[in-house]
Length: 216
Image (tube, rainbow, N blue to C red; front, top):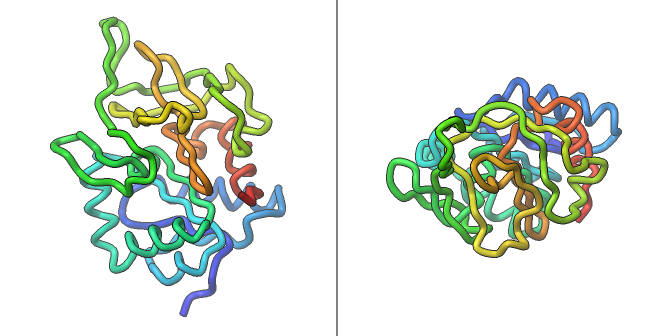
């Protein structure tokens, strides 16, 4: 049996696992929080972790199918989040928190944040899809993961779809790209960022440190 980590980064064949792990390991050392960081495809390791990180890159349906294909992993994440384990979803990992993703058909997510993951719509031909690159954040409301992060701080995005929560109170930050595009959602002990904190330099590292120290 593998040693239980403080922070489990879920490996299901999607996500920038190396860069995510390095960023979390660095901030765990610097902040002295979050315990050992382990990248794992073992559901029992996730069940014993103090906090869970779910990265994701690619299409919603492919990521959902890949996660379900890891024996017991979907159920382990559901079980631990329901029990109050702090959870952070990154990019498609954040999108999987929604009811549905509408990329190449309709695909079910965890259903933690009511709403669909739908295409970003822009009416300015100068604005490109995918939405790719650096954007200044607009903070909608305070959250412990956003402590020390201010309006105008930049984060790095690569995506064509985004989650629009049915309850506006579930959105904690957005950026403007032909209209508001969700950057962060949260509820209870779970949070998700559409941007990549592992690629967002000082802004991302601060959010990672905040997550590792978060005791909701």
